[in-house]
Amino acid sequence: MQAGLINTYQHPASNRSWVAWALSALLFASYVLLYFGSVPALGLHFDLLQRVAERAGAALGLPTVLHSKWLLYGTAYTLAMVVGGIYFLRRHGNSRYQQVRTLSVVSVQVVMAFLLPIVLQVFGRKEYYFSYFWPLKIEYFYPSVILQQPFLIVLWSFLGSLVAFPLLAYFFGKRFYCSWVCGCGGLANTIGEPFRHLSSKSARAWTVEKVSIHTVLFVAVMTTALVCVNWAIGRQHPGFARFAFLVQEWYGFAIGAMFAGVLGVGLYPLMGTRVWCRFGCPMAALLGLVQRLGRFRITVKKDMCIACGNCSTYCEMGIDVRQYAMANETFTRAACVGCGMCAHVCPRGVLKLENKPVRWRAGQPIRVYAVDL
Image 1 (cartoon, rainbow, N blue to C red):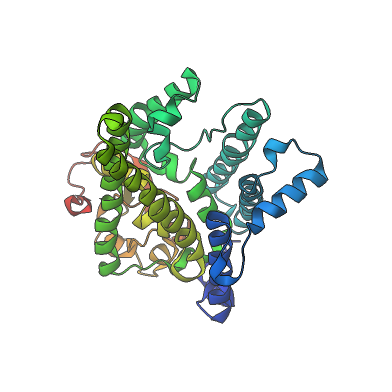
Image 2 (image 1 turned 30 degrees about the vertical axis):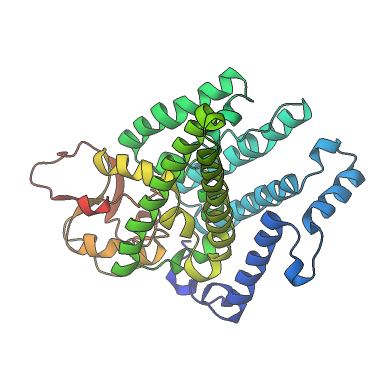
C-alpha cells in the first residue's frame, strides 16, 4: 500500500515541532564536533570524536591508520543510508523505479565511498572516494592532490567530471548522479525520507536557490583556478600565494564544512533534506545547466490533474509540480534531481519522467526555463 499524505505531517519529528528542533540541534552539534574537533568556548578542549574513534579502533584491533573519526563518521553515514534505504523501500517499494534507484545509491555508497577508501588506506594508499567528483569534491582538481594519486584514479576523476557526467546529464538528466550515485543525495533519499515534504515551494525560495547555487559553482571554479595558478607561480609571488591559501581555507570552512555538513544535514528536520543539494552543491548546479538543455523532462498527461498536491508536497527540491500539471505543461527544471516521487505519489498517473528530444510530440507544449540559469 502506498504511504501517502495521510501520515506525512503526523510525526512530531517531521512537522517542525520541538522534537524537530531538538533533533536539528543534535545534528548541528554532531557536525560541529566532527569538523572542528575541540570547542573551547563550550569547555571541550580535545577532539571528542577522534578520541572515541581511537579507542574503538584499538578495541576492534584495526590498523592504526584506521583509527580516525572520519572512518567513524563514514561508518555511521553508511549505516544510516542502509537503514534509511530499508525504511524508504517499506514505504515506497511498490515502485520498481524506486527499488532500483534506492539499491543503486546505497550500493554505491557502501562500495565506492566506504569500502574502497578503506582498502586503499590499508594498503598504504591515499584514501579516495570514487563516487565524488569535481566540483563537488573540489580538492580532486588541486595539483597537490592529483600528484598523490595513481594515473588511473586521476583519469577516472577527470573523465568523470569533464566528459562522462556532462554527457550523461544531457541524455538522462542529472538524476543519474544526484539520485542514483551521490552520497549526499543518497542520505537525503533514505534516512531523510520523513523530512522531504519540508522543502519550501515558494517563489522566493526559488529565487534564492538560483542565485545561491550558481554563486557557489562560480566560487568553486574560481577557487580551483586560484589553487592551480598558485601551484605554478606561488613561489615567485608570496602575496598571491597567501591570498590563494586564504581563499582555499575559506572555501573549505564556509562551503565544505558549514554549508555542506553543518547546515546541509543539520537542517533536515526544519527545511527538508536537500538544502545543500538545492542551494549550494556546485555539482548539482553544473549538471543542472546541462540538464536544462538536454533530453530529460517531466511529461504531463493533458487534462488529467485533479490538483491534489501530492506531487508538490513530496518534491524534495521545492518544485511546485502541481502548477505545471494543472497547466498541462511538460517541463524541465534545472533543480529537479529525478527522484521520481512526484510521479510515484500521483493518484492518476499524470506525471512521467522521460528522456525525449525537445520536440518529441507535435503540438505538445514544453516549458524550458531560461531563468533557471
